[in-house]
Length: 117
Length: 143
Image (tube, rainbow over all chains, first blue to last red; front, top):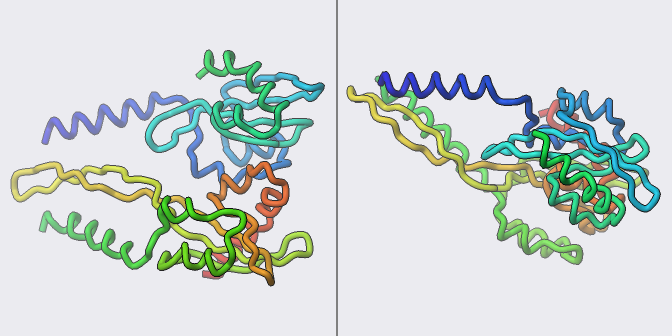
C-alpha cells in the first residue's frame, strides 16, 4: 500500500513539472477565420513559440503549442494568414495540406519547430 | 463494503452499453457519394448522442452526433478484500463524430470529428461549423 501511495505522489509531482499544454478536446473550439487573440483566448494558453514564413508571396504565422493527446505530448501548430486562422494540426498534417504555399511555409519552419518544446 | 467503488464503476460501465458507438470500420465506408439510405445502413444500430437541424447561410442542414470509439485506455482500481490488489480496467475512449446533411435532399455534406470538420480545406464544410457549434450549444442547454 505504501508503494502505491509513493507512486501516486511521484506521479502528481511529475504532472506538476509538465510544461503548459493544450488538450485535444480544446481543438473543437477553433474555427477558421479566428484572430490570434481569439485562438489564445479559446485555448486559454499563450503559444510556446511563434514562427513566421513566406511562400508564393503569401505570409504565414505559426503559433506553436505542446499538445497532450491522451497518450503523449507532442508539438502542435496553428497557422494564420493575414491575421486569420487557416489551419491547425501536427507538423505532418500541415505538410500534406492541399494548399501548396502553406505546405512550403511549414517546411521552412519545421527545423525551428523541432528545436523548440 | 470496500468492494462498493468497484461495483459502482462496473455499474457505470454497464450503463454505457445502452448507447451503441460508431467504429472505424463503419466510417471508412462513408464517402462523398454515399446516399442517405446507404448512410443509414452504414450507421446501423449506432445511437446518435445528439440530432438537430440548423441553418447556415440561408440553407438548412441536419446534424447527427455519434460517439466514435477511437481506442482504449487503462485505469487502475485498488480492491481491498482485505489485502489490497491493484486491478487494471480497460476503459473505451470515445470522440464525437458528426454527420452533416443538406436539407431537404439529405445529401451528405460533411463527416468527421468536430475538429476535422472545422479545419476541413473545403470552405463549404468548414464555414458551416460556427453555426453548427452554436446550434449544438443550444441543443445541449435544452436537454
